[in-house]
Length: 150
Image 1 (cartoon, rainbow, N blue to C red):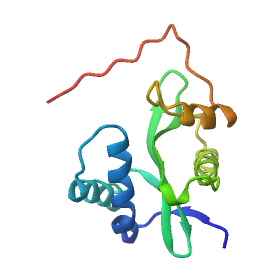
Image 2 (cartoon, helix red, strand yellow; image 1 turned 90 degrees about the horizontal axis):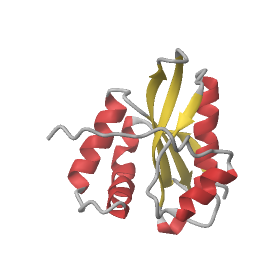
Image 3 (tube, rainbow, N blue to C red; image 1 turned 90 degrees about the vertical axis):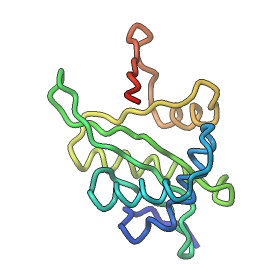
């Protein structure tokens, strides 16, 4: 059976949460399944993000999560591709690429100017995928800053 890519609904939160928790652990966070579930449920419930899932035989094997944003200088909509994860059992089947392509289609359909994303410097597998899909690294002269509020 060929996996399908579709928008997640609130009823998918239970199936997405363990994958989201695994994604967070990949980036060095401690397991927090209950918090992961709450976070995903809230995003879906309040339509604060778009989550696309890769599903095969009724099982969700991966997801991509997009957050809406805007570019003031270009006065256009953009989407921040914040999270991409494919479960170990789903890897090697092209699901990451399929999810990325679905994210692109969603951005185009909603009239976005661009998709943006960031990844860790050592995540070479992700770089390879992103670059093969046409993503370009930002101008090295632009600095990216974060202010932690807690």
